[in-house]
Length: 96
Image 1 (cartoon, rainbow, N blue to C red):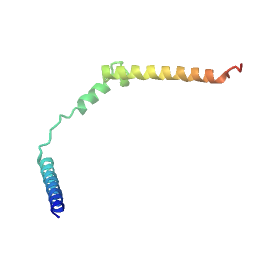
Image 2: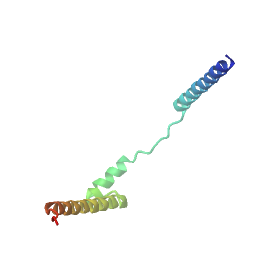
Image 3: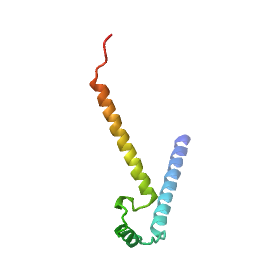
């Protein structure tokens, strides 16, 4: 009987601490000051609308160029590998 009472007291204290934590989290989230972000959309619009001869998919800078090159390498490599596999599959293995 004592063990049951101790277990239920432990559960009650755990539940109480969880409820307290929920209350604290709710209060913290609702009263936390929100960060103000600078609106960079007009700057980006100006950058992407410039007529400077650079393709739009590369106007983002070095990161765009790296992503473009990686995509091209993977595309060419995947196409070459697919053609190789088709060629291998089209010639059956010789029976000895």
